[in-house]
Amino acid sequence: ARGPETAACASAPPRPRSLPPGPRSRPQSRPQSGGGSAMVAALFGCWFHVGGARAGVSGPVIPVGPTVVQTSMSRSQVALLGLGLLLMLLLYVGLPGPPEQTSWLWGGPNVTILAGLTPGNSPIFYREVLPLHRARRVEVMLLHGKAFNSHTWEQLGTLQLLAQRGYRAVALDLPGFGNSAPSKEASTEAGRAELLERVLRDLEVHNTVLVSPSLSGRYALPFLIRGHHQLRGFVPIAPASTQNYTQEQFWAVKTPTLILYGELDRILARESLRQLRHLPNHSVVKLRDAGHACYLHKPQDFHLVLLAFLDRLP
Image (cartoon, rainbow, N blue to C red; front, side, top):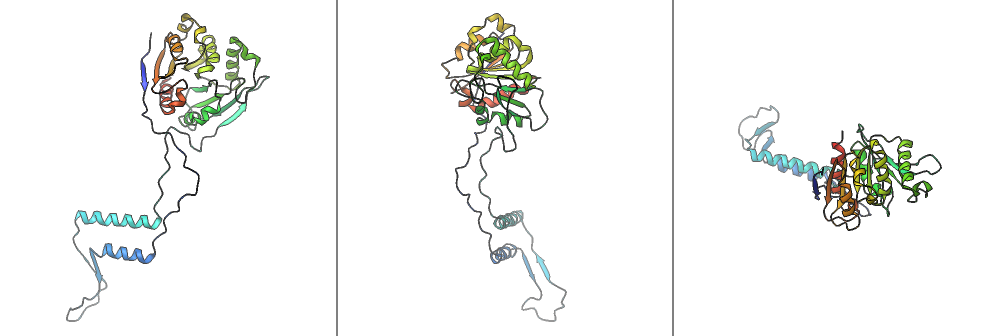
């Protein structure tokens, strides 16, 4: 059975850009009180006349206090008066500068990224975020490709985004990458599957969705074949080593799977897609104008597709 294949477009809000260093512009100085009074007089004088006795009035004047004579006001005059008051308020408090560009897809300063090492003789370095509000049922484990490590997911904003959306997420440095030392355990297919199982157990990651780009397929695929019952979802991104498994092995895996690849990928996309299509419960998304590391080339599209997949899981 083949799942639907769709193409993600750049419909997400733009990635936030930090402002160049340098001093911020100072707010405009407030107008002097005399200018404000003149403006008030100019505005209110159009419709109100305040005074006591009028010049040229003959006869005795009975002092009954200030007399306010109000003229009728049209709707346009009322609107003009409101605009004038708003202008005065802005001049008083100082006009604010343009806000920095932001996007709901990116983490804010309130996201704390934890870091640590798993216990044991071959510790694995990891970065972790906890959900900022009510936790979702699934938790996300992020692996990485050959030229990257767990810091990639922090730089990309993926960890921060998942925390904001209520997901616990853990990104690993695979053995020999980042802050994780090489491990003999990673020299065999069975050892790599056991390594992932051990990390999940040590960090108490439950209902796991495994995100596996490129090289990390050497870890994710043997774990998927052997222990797919432990996974709530699987997100392969042109993973390596798909040729090592048979159609029957893939067919036996019932884990919901989101197959992602870049339209311009000439490295692993075709081979991995051909094999992964044997997974019975899968959907396919092609990221347009993206290469092998499509999540780096189109991060906003990647995040939208990933979140949509996670949100659909039970």
